[in-house]
Picture 1 (cartoon, rainbow, N blue to C red):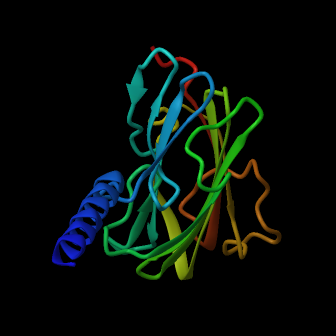
Picture 2: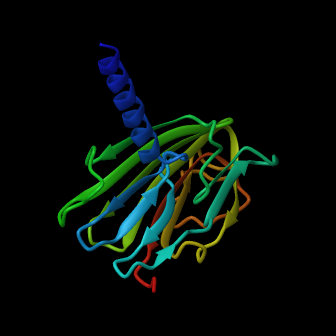
Length: 200
């Protein structure tokens, strides 16, 4: 009986060790499509890296940074995942599958808070495509400001910033073509397409 108990204990310890090794310390997720492209995403819906079918990889830098106006923090950055202690809710489709087939569309929806900032981020990637779409809404009870905006940092081919409620002196909510300015809003939306087609 003791031998059986020892075997069960050894099996349990081995299984626990294997499960622990399979989980990344930062809780990131990697998905691979039928063309051998892969994308690694954080639990906050941030693109950590993209690898093309030739095996070339890029790790994006930040394209934008949003903070409470007049304060050093908290801030949300496009490519930097928040601190480990930040809690998040993430939904992934298709579920429980790291390999995508030709017609699959990966959808990752993440919601989290960074101090007074609330973030809703939705990432989509179609299998076989070199483009990743991100729709993001950052909101707070206080005014928000875009402190950094670099169109080249992540090969951003399109970006839309929409701030509501309307900034002071503006009668209606700004259109999608509204240019960035020092005017502040309590909600900022980004629609960004990351294009990795030139990755060599």
